[in-house]
Image (tube, rainbow over all chains, first blue to last red; front, side, top):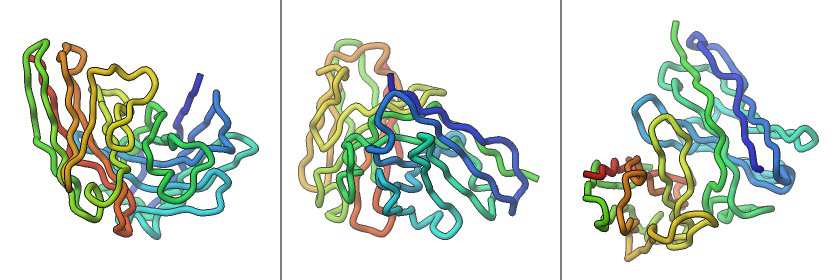
Length: 126
Length: 111
């Protein structure tokens, strides 16, 4: 069955960097567009970034552009999110999610997020 | 890019139908059929309930249906059940530079 397992969260001081991981199994990872979405405590969902199935293109929400980098290792079925210059407002549960349409590019990667991981909590605090 | 507008809460009795609205603009909801709906129970990951305005993924009950008119999308839950009590988020592709925007979320309470 499809599994997405995030890891790498924890407590980090403001200004530091951190890399989150999302281990995928049960589906053809190299054929799947992947997203990161976060949810601050008690708040709604916020889309962060998308990467095409082959890593050829990446896009980011305006709010995180320049500080976050999405990447993937298709040989190890793993998605990453590098986060730099962390701020208190980055405190959230971070989810990885798989695009519904296989081998998607462009707008089709936003057809729906079919599978989600359980999330990893990042707390940015001194 | 502002979040899509949803009512903060909607409630209904078991067996009733409820509808949640999601209002955007011509740059998002009104301009594309890439509107999705997600259900989220407390402490759990979101679950895709509707994609591309009105399509249900495999395994999602046909009690859930979606539609769109102009800049407003809607999710209808018929035959309300206790397990439907959750937060519901709409989302849409947007031509703004942010690309994808969620609604603020609606808490559904089963009375």
